[in-house]
Image 1 (cartoon, each protein chain N blue to C red):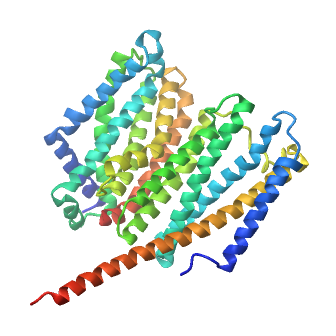
Image 2 (image 1 turned 45 degrees about the horizontal axis):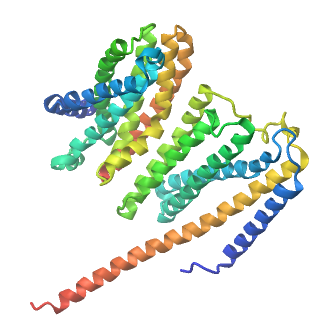
Image 3 (image 1 turned 120 degrees about the vertical axis):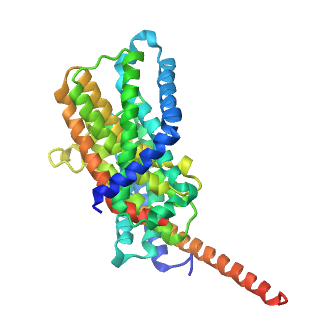
Length: 224
Length: 244
């Protein structure tokens, strides 16, 4: 079986679990919605602040909800000895990494589409240069999923993983947050050419952590 | 295994203490106040060396982690060294931020500025704080060592990305002066000497602290091992007296 088929197998498994358990739909998505509301409470909606800072708020909401989705992605492995089954399955570590990252990325993308509608409606954000916005979002999501999966497996199986995981992953993905927000701002303010350096930065980040996960996931999975 | 009285350590400690005295004399008494910053410039003799030591410490952590992961050089000692160096690194990163803040108040009129280098230093602080937290989680030494080594490298490869992202975001900090050839004469004579003595003193201090922390960690590991041996011996003794 090729690596791609193996990865798709793992991704399919994770997504099937999500479709059936509906944890992402029933818990993670409403959580992100509440975060959007809280931002409006914190920044008075009448002062015209919200549309200006909407890209940043959007990505903070994605990041916070993404933490939940990532924790969930590894919590499902902890139950019923699934991790042992995964180890015994003979699947390549790199393929398992890609599969899990793809499943997380798919969930994050779905979340971003819905949250995107949320910021357009709630924060009165006007979308321009959709191509740049979508490109930046896609690559940022891939980077988030890759880095999150690397740190997810690092923290998986530890007793303190719920508290340790956010501390480990948030400083690491800080550049993604920064890059995606600036790219969105540039695109939305009608200067898409200024977005490209940020998109390049996001690409570099993504490549780094995909490589990292590709190499390190197997050995880490062995030990958790 | 001894904690005290290795001659090399004593000599290193003596040198460190002497160089710190030199730094105090040069920094507080010999060097002139800056014509713009006044006496606040003296904080730079601590701030810049502290920043240098934190980079040095993270460099050593990354190198030791890589050496641990490479099969031919794998040894528990590299893991211990990586942990010891990261602890000192976090300490000095925190010190860098605090000293910079104390300096910023009189010179920039703010405690904190959202400047590129300050922000990336703060991110660095949290990156390695997370690494130390991961190290504190109890586990089998070999498992923990491999996990920590991978985490250290994963944090290390993030450093340039953080640096450039924040650099593009905003820049207010003065450019590095010492390593810029065109600007090199910008630091006046006795100020440069004070700064240099600060770098030397802090580097020696780093080496001294690293040696102490490393030795302490080795002894901690030995105690853990001994406690385990004692517990096993006790259980064995119990098993001997139980009637069959």
